[in-house]
Length: 149
Image (cartoon, rainbow, N blue to C red):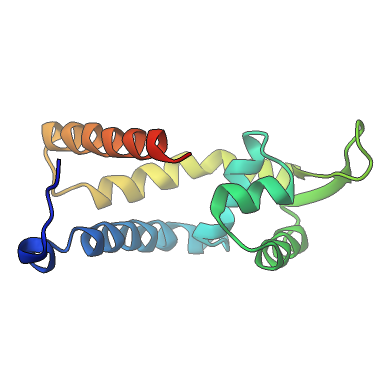
């Protein structure tokens, strides 16, 4: 179904609204994270490492970040004592990333900070509106991923 045409495309600004929504979410989350000395981008890396995508290559692919930028971010996280790099036991060419105890402790309190930020982010929505928004976003993301070869 074609929902957009030349005549209504500028009026709707759908892409801009999605971008602004994501930026607002990240700004609200950043306010909670700054107290812990970590950025939203660093949080994303820690969360992905915890879920087992624990190589720099997989992080770059997952976050669409250039390898040089990822190296700098990993250097910062290592400097803060939140991660360590180690050789893969199966393939010595691979470098695996692991959370340190400090990184794990910090990661474990993220759900509290994320919940506070998301409550602030969605306070203008009713429970039903939030459920509908989530359903629609999942529908769009699922459809998009099924169209990408």
